[in-house]
Image (cartoon, rainbow, N blue to C red):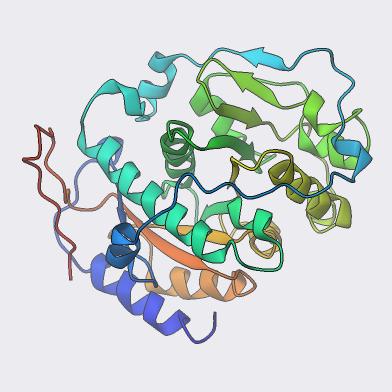
Length: 313
């Protein structure tokens, strides 16, 4: 990580110097990573390759519920927060998150040969400060992955203080992973919310407590995340975390995630904030910078094959 950090900062800083922002309400994502994003998108992805799940072990993952909790996510609630369903038609936002999805899948395939291949499907999303678009990115990326034919997504809310992810989705929950890890619920399967969107489920935070960093750094937390991906060889876990400069929690979670997506708001996130955040994320095996609120790089409406993509230098 340390060897790549200057390159990451230089790439982000170069993009932050570009003029002309579009309104935040219509912001979309353009990959801007320390890895070669263009090559990642073009790399062949064996999407049908399944990773064999390992033997289940932590008893707290088991469920005593007769059927999963069901919630309904309204497209109206999503649209109010700038979230676009991949089924809504061709648009700039949909296509940009499809491109980001391909990059995430390619990274997962490359890291699947590690000692713990299941962990390659745990992805952390964070930023330097609030308001830079991390929850917007988390939800849109999770939906893009859910529409993948060979993937399922569990979107995890790791912000117990604001729980903005639940507000984006227009749903609520009385308990979540905090209760499961603390042993206050029979199992994490009892607090997972299945949604009306196929392949898309949500793991709420639960009730706020003063010892969240200690709970996150516990062995039980690591076991819970690993077991959730091992249960289903097609499942990706997207973790919507706190901003790096707000809490130590993102640095704790970054050590447990195979990929960290760091959201940078064009012309808003300072170089100093990027540098400080990347130092806190140095335990992550892979950090990619995602440029948000940037100059549109894709046409507003896609028609046939007549769209254009450009990678700013």
